[in-house]
Length: 436
Image (tube, rainbow, N blue to C red; front, side):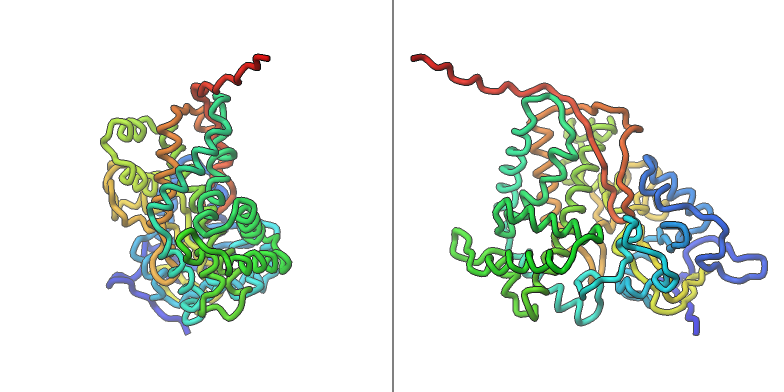
């Protein structure tokens, strides 16, 4: 049986695109649709979102890979309703209909987020089980001190800058943005640099579909070592709290929770920081407003979330049953992408000026509902400190044309592959001469 869905008193999300017989549109009906790589690798993402809205309304059929389609949801109210569980959706990606059709998700970076999970992890379960696995993450992140975060982030970022400040050239993605999360976030959790790097490496392997049981066992071992670790004030480290949390049934569950947290943290922090630096280097209006004091750093970070969204889409949802959403028929097993990155160009919530809404936190970058980011304020503090530290110490200029920059094929995060810059080299101290 097909149900009809109404959101906030308004059925549907766009113009009527039914075929002449009046039949609602199904995902596989159109002969050709926009591909996700066209969106994720475009320089002007807003233009593609605008074209999709004009053609399909606020929910468009798109193609991830040949034979693998998804609904791209670009309407604010619909995204909120779906993220809050008001529609029959699940985060259990093993129910995606592509698996039944033999669509491979192991080798494609665009399909990996739809791969069935080999274990029950916090991002792929719902209801009471999700609440049980989510509680430790919320509680552990809640005890991390903001002042410690700012102090540690600044210290680690200064160390990274020391590594290239004397050269006058750098790829900020490779030398600054990419190593920053494990050096900072890993320190907050209580790991030393080597252990933090390994945890983040394993998290990345699993996110890329290459991790195995041995990797989870290794992280479980690292967490077990944290149970006896203490902070200078005598309290257990956050990682130690995670390992011993009563909500987890075993250390493997704690390890999987840690890997889920670090995988999202690594990509999210990298993306937000890179997009902030990208705007500062390529948008003279943004840079001028920031340098001239018209935007504080927090307002600038909010503008990044609107104008150069680091999150393209939230974790994919799968339709649990057939339902009508206005002129679209969503069928059980359909993949649904909640395109929060499209909201910056949504005329229903933004004005004509690209800077309208400065300071607004309605961008949904961190999600909403049960699966929302557990610590957006920590992410903001880390990115703010990292951006301030670099821009205050150096005066980098882009060493390539903006149109030459490329983004990774990832439909969840907007990940720059490189950001080459030049700057005035810092003078290195002269070595002391030896006088016999």
